[in-house]
Figure 1 (cartoon, rainbow, N blue to C red):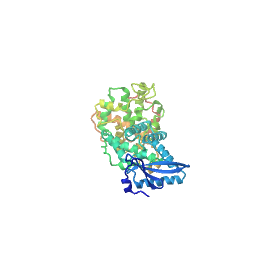
Figure 2 (tube, rainbow, N blue to C red; figure 1 turned 135 degrees about the horizontal axis):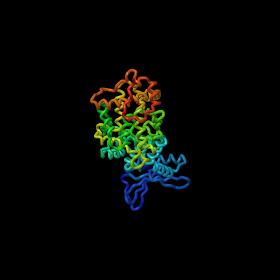
Figure 3 (cartoon, one colour; figure 1 turned 90 degrees about the horizontal axis):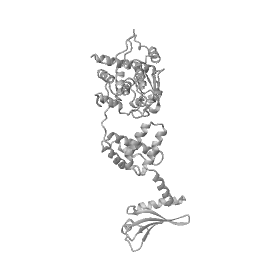
Figure 4 (cartoon, one colour; figure 1 turned 180 degrees about the vertical axis):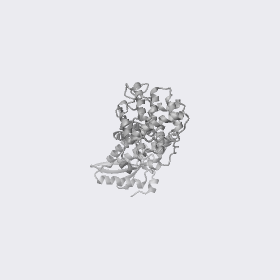
Length: 439
């Protein structure tokens, strides 16, 4: 006789085990202790077997019947339900968030991501591991992830929490792609976190103030190599990490070009930087200090390691500039702003020199021009302009914007600028010295 929910609920324990049958091998075992357990009796391979289906009322009568029917279908397919369960448990036990996350990190490494990027991903994942690292990824829901993110927010790290959500989502999407998860639960958490107040990196974009900064760098009384680093940041405006980890073999002084390898650029492709006469002068002087080694800016503790990522910012603070006034990275914004405001240079040439990638996917696929000749002229003009700012603001004359090259000046013609760029031999001049006036 088939069971009913009322009969299951009212089943009373006896001194001995009671077995109430529902048909098809499904039984409710009523223990002397009062617990009620679902069991499925079946035969496989000529042997009588038993499969545990959970306890009542946690597993309802309807759910127990569904589990029985699922087991019957496996039997019809020639599969032992008990062995199938063991196999699934063994597979699920391996699919922890931590294990899949480590696979994902390995994938990023094979794709050639920078070591700094890999380290950042690992750093973020370390926030998640205590809460979800050892859980089966299929069992992790949005609420569990949110609890892990809230613990990061509680420390005031709002931006880190948002980046962690994105990283966890990447791991889940990788798990979905490899058939070990059904969906990405972080999608539902897009608006659940506190939005951090975005503060752009401080930069000086006023010409007069920039001239003052250049003069302050000139008289900086710290390490000469640090002063040279600040001068090169102003002249070349690379990303600070690209400069502090630069090596001497990246510089071709015959062609006046610095080639930053793809492994160290943000966009994962080589980037060429034309060297102005002033930049070459700084490098020549710097070579007398660190040219015996590999790095332009070795640490004072080890010549095999570069200066820290805070060295240049610390120098700016020592010079009296607060973090809300200027940063090493801010030299990029300074150059971008003033070069665009002058109206002389093609915006794409400026963007290429900044090593930016076109945000429009379609345009990026077709706009591959390097604008090299124009960039050569632009970088020499920029160095000359910095010289003028330093000298003219020192005399009290304020310039409202970047100067336009005069007609007939030695940088008004593209071919002449390129010829000067490749053939310049004046390497002993001061880094901030102005070029001779064209006659």
